[in-house]
Image 1 (cartoon, rainbow, N blue to C red):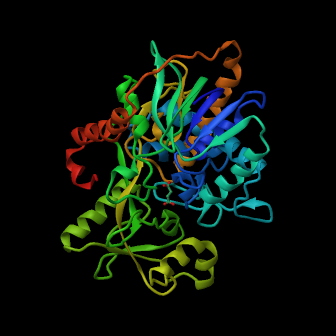
Image 2 (tube, helix red, strand yellow):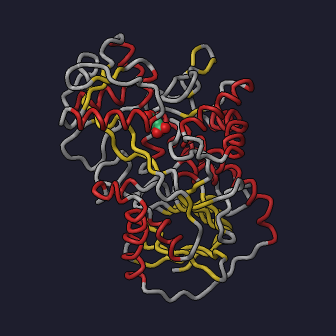
Image 3 (cartoon, rainbow, N blue to C red):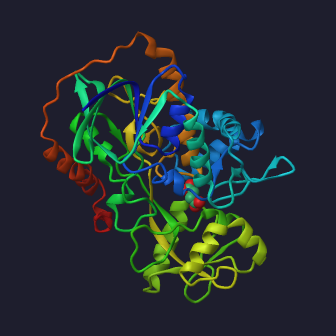
Length: 427
Ligand code: SIN
């Protein structure tokens, strides 16, 4: 089957949805999701979204982001994100997102690497609330159509120009031709044995990029979150949000001794935990928040409280066994500050893209923010430039089975070359 549209967006995490909602309402959009809208890393996000506290905080925000990223970040991109952060948060509020607040004043929490409280949140399930709110908004937009359970297999390409995408939907082939295509396909956690990500994220768009010589960047920059709930085996490791540490939770080794400053950037804390696991030849350390008020814990962290209870752990009384797990990919498809890739008419936003914001270690809660800032930039560019564009149709005769198979291994093999140190962690 063939469809045509003005803009094709692949992926329905925060970056894909925010791009779609920022496009002019006279532009036709097809949003494609591999599963459904509730199956994304954005939906799982707990801690919140970072933002500058006020105009005077821009410099500190930049320093914290560069410091966490070990100064491998692109400073000009960090500046853009800091400068536009308040505005995208206000835009979410206008879309109906309700961040925790008292008497109309936003409540900010803290996470590792931030010098102050500057993270807006909705209890401990910020991502779920934001995605559900944006999904409701999508329903009002007659120009946006959503296609679910449909996997991107390849791009339609002519002379380094993207003409759309080839998809599989219930074993049937679907070609979607578009003036512009936006990849918002998320991270790579599905390639790892232990990850906090949804398993459907297998880096397909990165394999497709390799096949078409679309530039990738910072291939070896993978982030491990220090505190995933320890489980002997799990399809997805349940995250214990860094905001617990921001609110006072303490890391202890199996002998009950504190061994690290809990609010260091993520890579430093994860490394300390790994050292501790090796030193004591054990599988987990503990995160303890039980010294805080019970009612406060239940109200502020209902998702974590209830999920841990399902696993037999009452976090108001006992420490939580945790260990690091793959969490985020800082590398990805190289984009400029308008989210443009090295292929004409092709954009990338969110975790699949590499803007240079994060350096080699993302500052906590900067991921949803990046998706918002660059999703909106991408939409603004398209709004201005789409009117002289035409959809081009190209007959594509491809061996889909072969390509689908190749998508599973192309990027994974590249990753193994760059990160032989973690090849045991890959599935
Ligand atoms: C968390 O809540 O710890 C995750 C937030 C993030 O990945 O930035």
